[in-house]
Length: 220
Image (cartoon, rainbow, N blue to C red; front, side):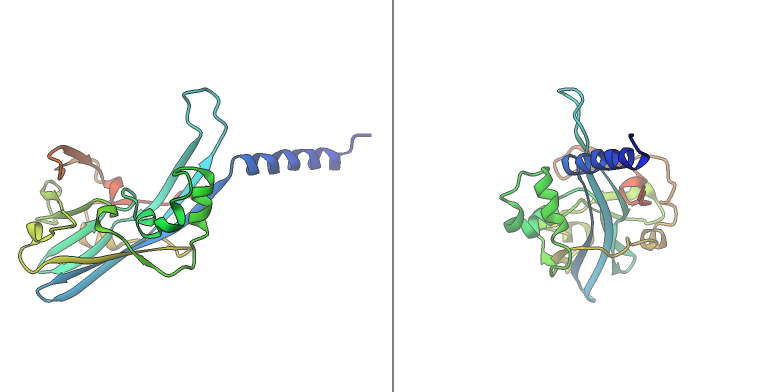
């Protein structure tokens, strides 16, 4: 007789096979920026949570993987009312810092994300400035329209003489996400619904929203 225990074993075997074929990976990333200012070095960091998962490709042109993230921008208080923000999710600081461990894996493949998960606990590494996420500032922190992109190679263009982005470091961790530091500076950001147009370093206009700065993690 086909028992309930047999049915449970069958479904467990199917679930296990599915998880092997279509795995899910998650980690957190701490990004730290160190900035030289006329008043001395200043630094800021944030922890962002990321989950990446795979699913069956039903149609030839359909996707077969997705991701979600939660956290907020890293904030560096430069003094004199000046702030530098590193947006949470774009750029590729992990590959920039740990490329020697990832370069043999297909970017976006299962083994690529499996290696990233395995980086948890390793010492933070320096990130090449070209691999950093988008950096921005607000000439007036009370005015969303005053947003401006910051060139990581020449932040003096944005902040004046004596300001240099000295270094950036990234670490893969299991620490909880950072929360509240963006709101302490930009108290209007959480829930702000308008686009914030900003001219890119390439001359093109990009539209940023509050979700580029803050996103509550959805762990479900």
